[in-house]
Image (cartoon, rainbow, N blue to C red):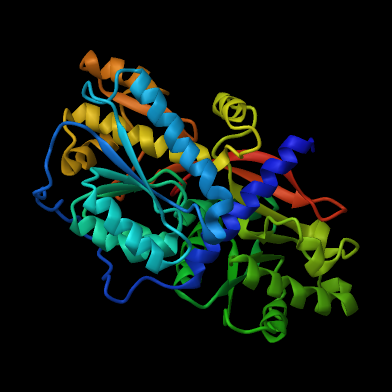
Length: 431
């Protein structure tokens, strides 16, 4: 793999590590009931409507998320610059107001209060699923529309956002389909699935289990205590069912503990070694520190990770030219959030959040394709229905505000423990 591509993978691993570790760190607040029925968008608030679209940027610029917060913010700023160069939204420049979400729910709540006090019409963010689950209630109550570029937790699909929340990254429900496809293509018909016994892990397992059963694959659940340091007993019990594949759905900490237990067990019983399929938090450079570069397990690991903007894409090349050294993969999701909100505002002819929210899904699907704000605005000016396909690929949104498909990479590890891309593929939810 070339140096630039390898750097991109390292950045992607850092992003996934923070976003999904945060998602696993705590469950949805008990005060936020889950609803499966459509909810009416709340009445427009009394905030002034001046015709100018104000977008709040609620992304991490300090703490553990600072390493990738900068490219996300740059993705928003790049989109806004292009929008304003094309004449703005409803003939007025877009205004960005940025607040650092930090790395915990306390700083995030303070940032949300500042944005709402600034009378923003829309928000790009938060980045973390955990933070989103904690602050979305306040954003929705204020009647502000938001779009997250990286919050992937399945629980957000059923969070009561009143139709005011969207995301451009595929949810973990789509990644579950991607993992099931990888297992199915191996030709093996049974798997044990290791997952933390918390809200995040149980939701992911439920989705993955359904996808695996649809492929005709037998599933053995292997839940583990996310606080347990030694998972040997869980691994022994799972291997006792003689699964053909081992699957790990977890954050990096839990996943490496499963791998550590597997290494100890298979060191004395190599006949127990079999293919291992993992989700994206385990795409990390120090995986060899857990199982060693000479361990046979290393060559058995394959995983899936979102791939918003392959290095060959025009957006990635343009982004790299403007922001040398910054990764474009997740910036593409932020860029698309910004464009979707602006295009929806232009289509609605209003900066009213409810009107924007009502138009977002419509401009993402079932119309003439356009890839930039300028192209989409020109088509809207011709009274055409549009279908925005952005830097991250197709962003067709369903009734929950989730993208219905996503691009993924299948990755493995070389003899030094570095991750390598094995293939790229697309997945559509429910197929």
